[in-house]
Image 1 (cartoon, rainbow, N blue to C red):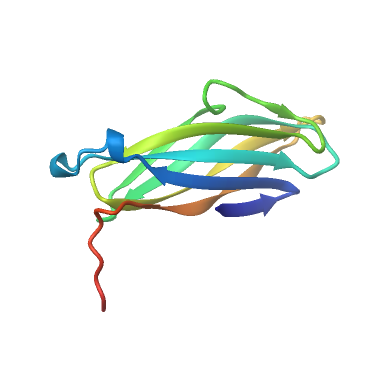
Image 2 (image 1 turned 60 degrees about the vertical axis):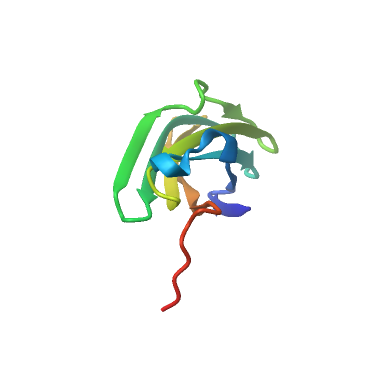
Length: 130
């Protein structure tokens, strides 16, 4: 599990390789990732936008931006949490993801919350020793 806290908002991510949706012989590898966002602060916040940087094993980078997550812009009161599952394909057997959520508090202040960098690993990746 990967975890990062920004302004009392904790984002935890757990990636899982999906063997049944992947086709290694066709360079198609798929992961699901479960995200939990916990509001450990004293103010109510709303998740407005997401921004992901997805990097494959050879350094190709893709950026994904948009409103909310999985079609929602959840509001989290102090002590509340929100969980969702999403996924990503890659043309390589491993990669890394990281990003930010744009949040807004009740007074209208917007701020970024870090999503921890997490590794996308499959049993098909080649191990190399230097």
